[in-house]
Picture 1 (spheres, rainbow, N blue to C red):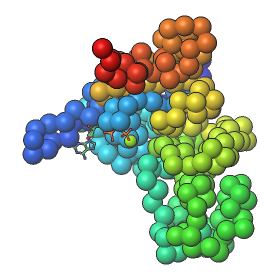
Picture 2 (tube, rainbow, N blue to C red):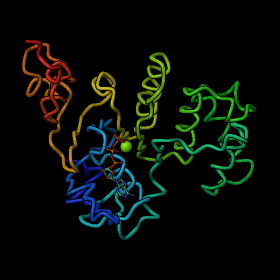
Picture 3 (cartoon, rainbow, N blue to C red):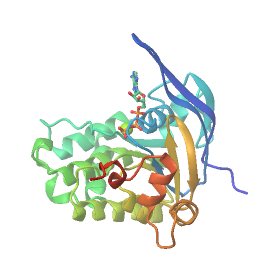
Length: 261
Ligand SMILES: Nc1ncnc2c1ncn2[C@@H]1O[C@H](COP(=O)(O)OP(=O)(O)OP(=O)(O)O)[C@@H](O)[C@H]1O
Ligand SMILES: [Mg+2]
């Protein structure tokens, strides 16, 4: 068996707040193989972003451990950072600078030389369909173009693992399909492991090899889209939406409608 690219054991995070502790993540055990596309699902507040922020070294766990791309998260966060890319839930581009400047700055942050950073910026723009937009200000990009730029920034240093937090939220169906295509291409061409969260279950179904569903800070189900549907959707031909509702215990909208008497 090849060594998994991500393993976590009891990964946990409690936030101390004025109103008392908030147990955002209560102990997550994960195994991800190299080259997998993982869909990390769960209702609002389930602990997805908190988990991603821990896996990407932005937030220290309060419990458990993780090994990411062969590096121990607690002992070698710099080693982890060098091998991963992270695209946050709300993208972090500077609206006042051009796409080219933003990409070059990102390259420089990853210690590329000036010429190298410029070359990489052009290369990434080509890969992500941004070549005509290099000299446009980030503020003038559409939502889909902005998300592609976010992705380009996350890929600057050719990471082994790409973490994407809701990469397609707010995009129109065409832009979402473009982004799926990009994610598949990146994986096919570079063997990149992709770990993404989404609330679009059709997207999770179409894109992910394997799904991990969290709720209240714990893994409540995992498996291929097919196996989760077979186990939880209730009827043959049931959708991932049906399975998700069964897993998270949320009743379907029609169940909450008062019954007329
Ligand atoms: N800095 C913080 N301080 C206190 N509580 C926090 C903090 N960050 C997150 N939480 C809480 O932790 C829980 C998990 O939040 P998280 O952002 O991980 O959820 P999520 O699954 O990403 O949700 P969404 O689908 O809405 O993005 C929530 O109850 C949230 O309010
Ligand atoms: Mg989130």
